Length: 242
Image 1 (cartoon, rainbow, N blue to C red):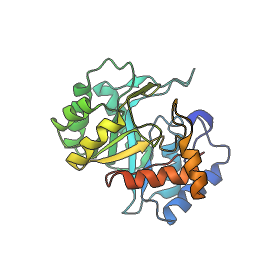
Image 2 (spheres, rainbow, N blue to C red):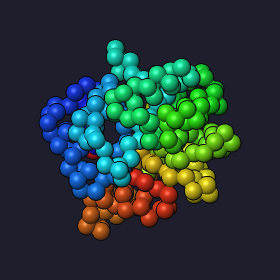
Image 3 (tube, rainbow, N blue to C red):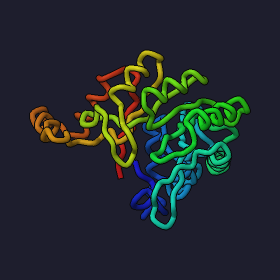
């Protein structure tokens, strides 16, 4: 669910409603929340803390680092130098009111100049320092995931993946190879968190999902989530809404 304004930027149109959505979600059994300090800018984290702090013991708040936002054009430039990652972690700790971040995904951004291993080294350093409990990665290739596993434990992977996006694609999120990364996650017992999991259209193949949903008497979103839940036991869908 998007808690910020349009374009994942700025305050929500109805702040009280956004806070109530968070409270209602957790009250109804939601135990995993995906966020980032660059959502808003920092709006999502502040809303989460305002609505839910002190947090219930079974609630996992997963944040992301590795990117920032350009206020001028709302672009997503890389922010992955070791000192920048530390800055992001400290900001998340402050706004989420945590002593240690439960789960952090290092997000690989297109155009990043810092080597992947250098950024991951900083993540594992902060884990050893007690600032991070569990380290994950996002938007990674199989090669990058393998490299991370050679450096330390990887709790989870967050890549684009859905019924419609299962193969290699290049877009604004970089190279997406969810279909290749998923088997690695299964092999190593790593949770796979697919973002954009409600992407419906099949590129160059017509919308077969819509046809099947109509036959089953369900919505495309319901069918897409059901497909993900049955695809692999390591998949944890985070369907997005606005």
